[in-house]
Amino acid sequence: MNTSPAWMAEVVFDDNGLVPAIAQDAENGQILMVAWMNSEALAETAATGRAVYWSRSRRRLWRKGEESGHVQHVHDLRLDCDGDVVLLKVHQDGGIACHTGRASCFFRRLEGTSDHAEWKTVDPVLKDPEQIYK
Image 1 (cartoon, one colour):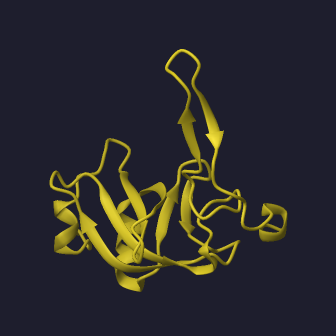
Image 2 (tube, rainbow, N blue to C red):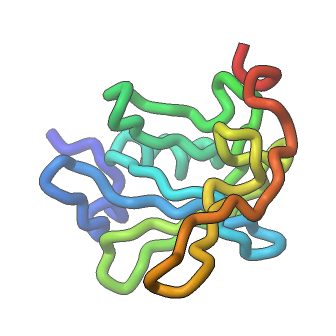
């Protein structure tokens, strides 16, 4: 017996049962992070309004903020035109989404010419990760 909500049938999960999930700041549009969701994570996110992801490294559900306190409250949940990417517009508690203590996981920018380019860290650490994860 399938207990998934009817709307879940429109989500295209990959062969591993996952769909990419983009977390975007609901106020300023900044992309905070990209993670993965399985159907259980997506259903819990929709039911609770709190971002839940699937951790590929830990092989379990990951409730954003469960260790750091930096919870993502979902204001809007969207599905792209192909049904294979989910967008979460969120309010990020503490203003920190990245485990490095930064606002966003996208803190490195490619700088230089194509022959001499390198990734430069351009966004500051807002809080030392050792103070976040004890």
